[in-house]
Image (cartoon, rainbow, N blue to C red):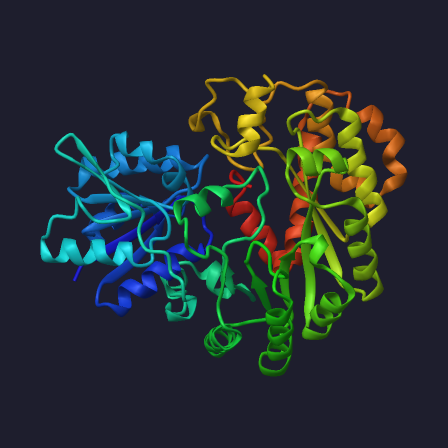
Length: 469
């Protein structure tokens, strides 16, 4: 038996560790999890658990804190560290960092299990597929690991990994579920195209069977409070036949509302009607920019204004609440473009408008474009990237102050369009705490309804995640 300890910085029940924990436990290994920002006596708890392997799931922007935590632990314990998730997958050079022993690239479902087996048996794991391993000042760079083609073969998430320690997460009335993996689109600000390259020849966008998803929801419903099902798929509405089967099943067999993410071009009347009848309480889709040329030529959304406007019209017709995702501060974006984003949202009348400052992830097509255009430094690296929603933007663009302020005030002016003349003057002011407070309130309002958490629980989570969102 190998003892694996998952570590993370914020109180949030990520699906990756829960999936990995379920697989590891099913094969005789022991797992635990600590959120270091929640633990007053963190190092002693790590020593008490005494793991054989410490696993970090890392996203870009938060990777530096995870590496630093690994260094702290390795000063106290002789333990192997492995880093998985989006960051090491796309930036494997992090293997060279002190404190990092192994990185996992791509899906870790079976590769982490294989690593645990090798550690348990005392076998050499430097040649395992899916990993880059640092040993004796040498880095072993192995091919990407196995892609799970049949998602139904995976066990249900091990939610107790979080719930046994963190009561706030256990008591939330909303639970998140994944009905598929991957995406069929090629937005320039996303890494999907990179994942497809890694798994060339494989079908990257995959779905679980409806019966498998419903069986998991039922199991969770029997064990925990469940008032809202949150579907976490990047795009839930891509496969109409599957969706109709699911909405029929969840209404008949589960009987609780659900929320999801969608694409405006996929939201025709038939799909929206099925969502509404199945109990969908809220959905979000990406507008990103109100300028159609920027949205399609720069962001590669392949999404015209009329599709977005028609989707919003149909959602209003069927009284299905919806939110929009919007970005500000993109390459080539002008203040006029940013105002177009506001105006399009006012026309759509979303219940929950949500906006962020654009983050240029190195290696994505849009970041390469930004560097070619001279609005992003040639030497820009992943270590220069800030956490999402931090409000920081490294791009060199005109009217940056006004665009940043407009993003902070976006929720306010979209919900109350009569404030447009006032906001045009307000964005000329220096960025300030009042604008940020308005932004956080709008973000919290949108998330509260999307996640179905209620006011009290939303406030508790917002306080816990105040430095991360």
